[in-house]
Length: 174
Image 1 (cartoon, rainbow, N blue to C red):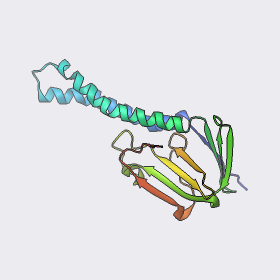
Image 2 (tube, helix red, strand yellow):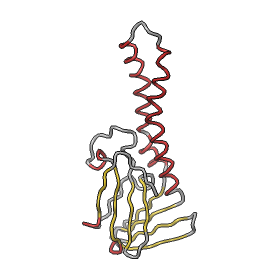
Image 3 (cartoon, rainbow, N blue to C red):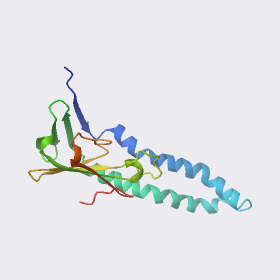
Image 4 (spheres, rainbow, N blue to C red):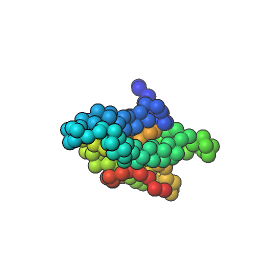
């Protein structure tokens, strides 16, 4: 008998998996930006275009940083344990010093918010496409939010209680 217990918390690997896309954008701007500006104005001074390159980078960096910090603040001191055999989830919050345990049969709904590209498992175009979060609503009224910094893609076997919502920018408001 194989016991399948999984422990999830914010790890550097999950943070890197989500945040590494901004480095691809930075690489593209550093490499292709000057080439494009040179081809458009071969006699012009390249240094005149540095502000445009910085603005282009910031247009992607600021939203990714905002969403990353928000996800970090939601699950900073939390740990989720999932037992495959018993179908039980334990959520520990060390900041609030609480432990909650519930079975999959106690789940009322799971709303998983992600970008359309991530939900369809397509190529991710924007740096924030890999960010997603799940709201777990229990029958007794409790609610938990699990972000992709903790569990990259939360897919629990709950059948029709699982629903996907797509959003261009999956920023959790409350």
